[in-house]
Amino acid sequence: MCETGQVVSKDDLVLVTGGAGFIGSAVIASLLERGFRHIRCLVRPSTSPRKIDALSALASRDRLQLLRGNLLSPGDCLAAADGAKLVVHLAAGRGEKSYPDAYLNSVVVTRNLLDACVQTGQIRRFVNVGSFVVYTNRNKPQFRLLDETCPTEPTGLARGEAYCFAKVKQDDILFEYGRKHNLPFVIVRPGAVYGPGNLNISGRVGIDTFGIFLHLGGSSFIPLSYIDNCADAIVQAGLVPGIDGEIFNVVDDDLPTSRTFLRLYKRNVHPFPSWYVPKHASYLLCWLWERYSRWSEGQLPPGFNLSRWHALWKKTTYSNQKLKSRAGWRQKVPTADALQRYFAACRAEANRA
Image 1 (cartoon, rainbow, N blue to C red):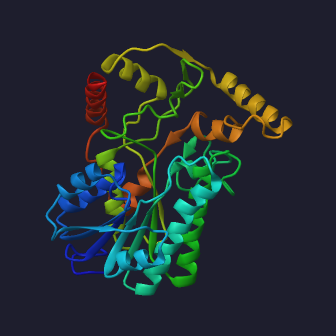
Image 2 (tube, rainbow, N blue to C red; image 1 turned 120 degrees about the vertical axis):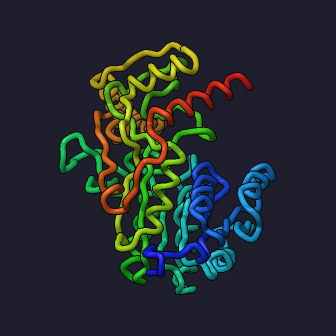
């Protein structure tokens, strides 16, 4: 532990992967706000000039180094990890329909980066940014509460989502390297991260697949995490000593229900037609869809299934108590203010369209 009482000091080199992304850029801003003076951001060669310019505007070159490289290259991983004391790993494949692509861009890249960290032997903590997508939301120790003690998907295949499969495997690799190489790591699992830069209504509220917005969340709470709060939690998890090997869920205080969120959105952004689907009806729809998909031997993809229903639309409550008590996190932007900032950004985007 360094002289500041944290895992790393403000003069140590911090590597951020995926720094050009929605959460990554906010993490870099949080590190800079805390006074870190040596941040290296690994960006893909294909990263757009607009995102590069946005990152460059955050700080001078002596505080923020932009390194172009690909995590699929072990050599690029080694160059990125060289000298780094803290690694915040956000790079991951998002939205792939293909399981091989998701595995390649989430799992293989993580293994390459971990190998580089083991080889340099300088890492004091590896923060892996996971996802709520790995939780099954079944057989929980406490009936409706989803927290860090809850079971995850055994393989991620039951959900029919390549991203879920890849994130489950990514977590498995972290635990493997922790055991075999004594690599100090923390896993941070944000809920539904929202704010300027990600203005979509979370699928936990509902979907518009059938031409009208189907409100599926009802009275369930949404595990929202405003972007500034999420980034601050990720950085905090990288700094606090004595929490290696731990998992932290990231959600805000005073979470709204799906019904409350949808009502506020319509009032503050724009009204639109929606149809509430009761829990028993959405459960039955997912059960029938899953059965037909099996009967048709996959001719109808299992886009709706019981695993997805449990994960997204089952009545659930959430907790950030462990993040507060073990990592010392406190919410930076109150939920009421965060929602108003989000709605204002949504209105501005609608006016530009």
